[in-house]
Length: 121
Image (tube, rainbow, N blue to C red):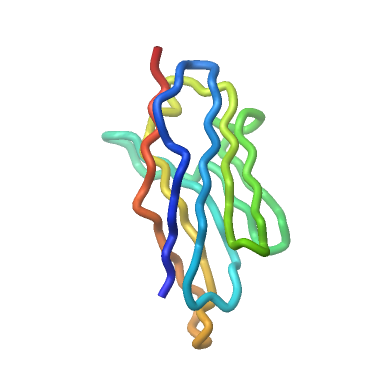
């Protein structure tokens, strides 16, 4: 019903930048929430940044000032611009959306497959 396609991950040196993108498609009536999470080996999955339907944003204290999340309502995409990357940013990054489906279902969350970000010299 809903598919999320993530792109933009890769290998980058400390201090470098990457831009992640997530595109949502399917029988979507409306999107309530779009966000990015990350999970490193041995760690819990954590929220990195999110944007709600009214445009309000939230950031983890670990990335505030370095990452910027943006949403394109017309294209149903959400991007994460990551600047000044650090080795501790290394993780698998997952897109998450909370939507109301076209059939009138309750709000439902969906996850992308993940894209790897590795920050290393």
